[in-house]
Image (cartoon, rainbow, N blue to C red; front, side):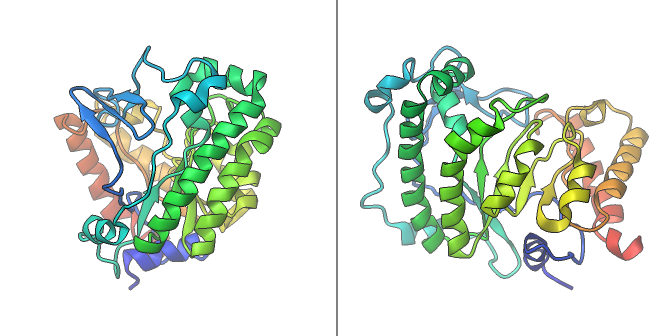
Length: 326
């Protein structure tokens, strides 16, 4: 029997897994990360203020409304603070931050490299998208500075932490379509994603893309960069077409309809089981699939806890050994 780590790495190599993994590869965050926590919100290393959203994935933060860092892309050099990485004891941090990871049985990832969405964090979507259309050279200069910072950071993280994968968390799409055209992505964003992907792959780690919304138009470019996996692969994408076209070349870490009624805690239990069964039976064949069902709401909500317990039990009884029973 393969360990969880061996099984998911086999999948990331494009091979058939022994069993279906459940989404939730251990995630390690470098504790140097200068995240200033203040009552009700926090500030990232660039100075962006974020606030949690109660009841949405346990308070997933968004930029604080009305407190955008940048109002004119031409002033980014004055306003955006690129942190210094000098004098950091990476070896000590890596030892402390990974002390609870069993490197033999657990795979772990690190999330770094947000490019497009960082612009919208700085300016908001309206001003950020206008800047891309009106001042592309300034936007690309900012992207280059961000990418250079991420490259320096990741060189240390890849060497000292040795993650199995690095995930680029960059949401480039709405629920209906990408925020930007494919030509604009290829000209203004992809070069920086590719620099990060090249660095990660050259280290021997796998590269994963986190992109919400209707973003399957970007898949050819992801594969061109060597992206091995995609999450959350939301259901507004044509996932069956993706599986038919790309097979195990791109691992789908998700595919669950997390915007449908079955993802709400009040959905009937039997109906939820039926939806889960249909989800797995459609996504599992051929491999390249990581089970990723959950319900919406705060993890502190007893209803959410109960439904997630049900989903966990369903995974153990039906999903994990699906390839041995089907």
